[in-house]
Length: 78
Image (cartoon, rainbow, N blue to C red):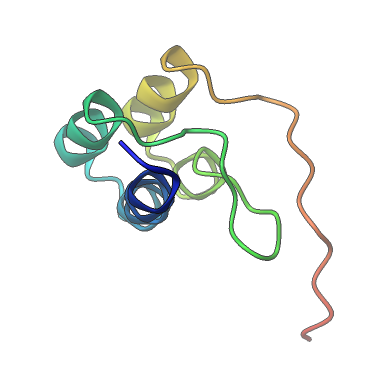
């Protein structure tokens, strides 16, 4: 898998994790998505499910190696 494909998978993982779709998250992880890759703001895949109460999804990401202490860039939106 090349860098571009892995980046695309990781973007899909981030989006899928936000909505708590655990089976799809697991499938993306199996295909090579990086659980530690963040978006432009620095938000990583475990952030969304953790904030939204999707414990099973967050657990799947952490089990796959996502960092628990990844920094998130502060927002300036009010």
